[in-house]
Image 1 (cartoon, rainbow over the protein chains, first blue to last red):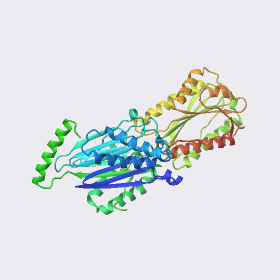
Image 2 (cartoon, rainbow over the protein chains, first blue to last red):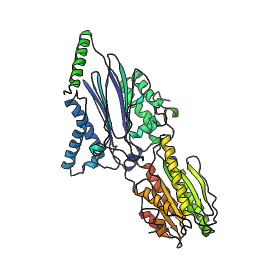
Image 3 (cartoon, rainbow over the protein chains, first blue to last red):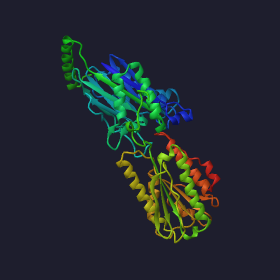
Image 4 (cartoon, one colour):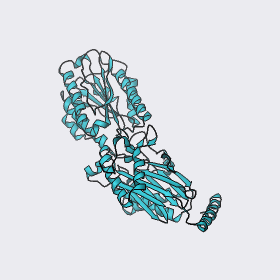
Amino acid sequence: MIQHFSCNITGNAHERDGTPCQDKLLIFTNGISFFGLSDGAGSCKQSDIGASLTLKETYSWFLQNPNSSSPSDLLLSIQNCLDKYASENNLITRELSATLLFVFINNEIIRIGQVGDGIIGFRKQNTKFKKLFDAQKGEFANETTFVTSPLNKIKFQTVELSLEVNETIDIVLMTDGIEAVLFNSKEHTFTSAVDKFFQWLYDEPSEEVNLGIKSAIEKNIKPLTQDDLSIIGVSYRYEVADSSSESVYWYTKAFNYIKRLFNFR
Amino acid sequence: MSKYDLIPSDLTENPTARIAICLVLDISSSMDGDPIEELMEGVTLFQKSLHEDPIAKYAAEVCIIGFGSSVTVIQDFKTVDNNYFVPMLSASGLTPMGQAVSTALDLLEKRKEDFRNVGVDYYQPWMVLMSDGAPTDAYSSSAKRSRSMMEQKKLTVFPIGIGEGANLNILEEFATRSAIRLKGLNFKDFFVWLSKSVSSVSRSTPGQDIKLNTDEIKGWGTL
């Protein structure tokens, strides 16, 4: 079973300048599930397009490589896609700079990755949320790396998690604007707002939750920051329908393990 | 209260990225009279303008160092969100600019370390160096240190000369940009410009290039 919420709000700075929101969000939940956030670089005018292309290319790559446990080729694929768009539109690729945060769920396997700033947290079976990766930031507030940075400068952080039958995982992805308000960097903890969002997700009608979270963020968080605000929350429980499916599950698990052992695709 | 609501304890305190600004001010005996009075008013206006800015008041942290008969930290780094400090400056003594800049750079480094320790993001810090003369102490090592930090994009330095007696060539040794000579005692316009520039930085989003409004400099200074 999968439940999710998402919210994407244009920040005060872009509203004031009349410029587009540079955060983009992509969600697909058909069989396999994909959740992605990308934050276009503030200094690049076309970075909102770069963010959209980055997410679409990441999703396509996972559709073609659903069992790959080493997504290092993904970055190359994103850069090729951005280079192509840039050359067709008379741009330099740097103008499309964006970060990337994603979660890809294929049965019991969950692949999570991050390039640049923003934050991803997770918890299993209702424990406390933990930060998954250290963001790749520079010393100052306006410095980070992007998917367009030279490959040897990018710290592409990925992890593959595997769930047991009936195990639940909650994952939260945030771009840096909302991270500053919902993650306490001194204590390395997520604030209680994140727990509230998930509680609303569990308890309230799904058609209401996104609107409720959006209204809470617009009222309580947007006045505190200039940046765009984007968040995705995913609650996933890996279930197997019946005993025959459970056998299939164990066969598939063994098969996938052998494939990974021999590095097959 | 809607069921979809948050309370302040659900959020972090002051999530605004900070910008540390150190004002390094000449209060030697030659500044006595109108210059020191105008300087005091300018510094007060600067803090008042930041205090009235809804974003900058949470982002800007201002430190004031005076150099004259001694080097004095008149105000350590503080935000101006609740109130602001009216500095009481009195002019006396020589111009120990080298020691003052060295103190400023040490305090800026310490402040950045504090930010890192509490997990607060920060912008490149600023140092404003204002003098109506030339250093009377050994200044070359602190000038070299300041300039090198600016070259490495670790610090932004604004060297400002007050009046015709200011040695702009020496002030420029502290920075990689040209020193600007204040027109008369036009401290107020300078500090209004400075507060607007701080405001632009505090409103910028990560990755955004920040361009200072150099056209407005013509209103208060000459290159």
